[in-house]
Length: 263
Image (tube, rainbow, N blue to C red):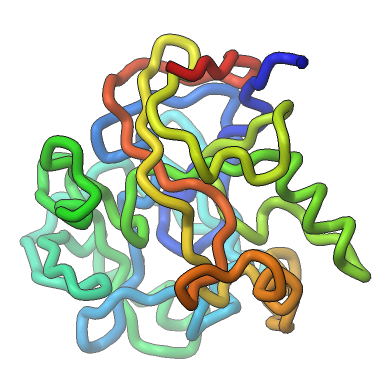
């Protein structure tokens, strides 16, 4: 059987905005470097996502030496790597997190674009947010991702889904960090300890999907697929599963083409 190897690496610097494909990425304890280290919060300082604001999909990000450029409807704003404003308390799901507003100018720009008052906040690398203790190996931390540091999906899993759909969907609907070629559909569900290149990983649990995969990442329009089809054959304990959540057990660099080795 052909070796399983990484075919795509993605980061999503601002939670629920567009992703950036990277040829390689640094693995930190909270996940890939710069992945979901920023988010938008509403007037109650609660996290915002495409679930309620599907237009968030239309913000396009590019990586540069000093941070990221964010483009929306012909306008661009620069996002620096570091924020230096005072700390504020925000919530993501049931977690309280300490964040910093990037700047009033950034918050105003996003408020105008989305048509609702919001702030752009940063989550410094040293700030604490634990993964669910029921799945922790050793008190692992997570950034502003929904629950776990990383998500991996096999191309074979998407291919199998698309064979069941009237209209195929691209992988970006599922917003993975890592995509791999080789192997059987959904085999990642059962992965436990494995290595990608020299980086050791642990599979935590299959990812229970919310409604974001129903948002077309190119148009910001919501539909019913692919969740309607997935729910027919991928429902377990009232959750629709697609992809595997991971925690890194060691740091390093992951690159496209790296071989996946089961332990």
